[in-house]
Image (cartoon, rainbow, N blue to C red; front, side, top):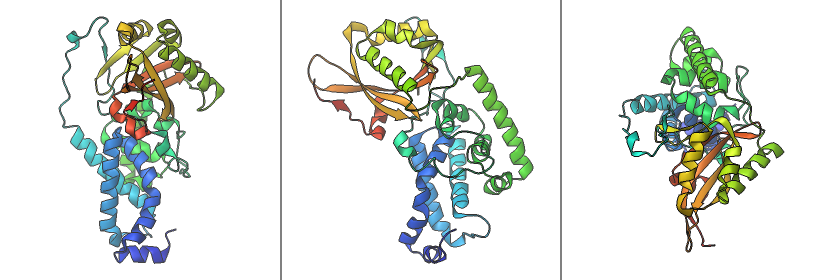
Length: 336
């Protein structure tokens, strides 16, 4: 329940009272917007717009119709829907695959705008009590694979499946948020579940070791040792047969152990070596990668997120080093 005096002060234009009411929800709203948009930058914008709209509309908030949290989710969801619809009108970049050396990369349907999400931003955001309708573990619902799968669904289906299956809102609550009928929500949820299931089956998603478990730590340590020593054989031995590398915003990657091995051979060509700094993104192991020159500072080269399965690596997603500041990682490391 919202304290009545705090709500009265906020309705009267007290900015501090409004911030006390709304700011406690900012972190979970950021996660919600990220799931809907797949982009941390776009999610930050959506949350800012949500807070501004809530401040402007707090005078009309009626607690008897919905809780403050539900009301904020309604605003955030509709801001994200507007952003999704606007983004769908942006022309896709054209890429000339003939510029690549064999083996040529394979086209993939990962969204070009996909970005990693720092685990540090999950603290205090995914430990809130979920509604009784929730079907997903919060760790699964923030993984890169799940977020990427959401991006290929129609906007309303994305909103419904997150609100119902991830957050556990009742159908009637979601219908009120989206201003549609309960039957419309049920229909959209059925289609969204079918779309996600098809993608999960196509990806042959297998269980991954628990975060921070000895099994996860062993794979991550083996990967770091092999990468920093440019031990291609050891790296390839860590991969599943169907492993792939995705490289947003490029709509292609390398699929299969042999193709990944050829790609990595070019990464380490001419004696290039790298140092890794560990972190976590989307509940998964991640690294900032820094080129190791003969002398001088070591510049940032890339950001990698690992998708693990059993005791192997099933996928690696490579991002540009521009995402490093979100993870409190520097643009370069001092000279060794």
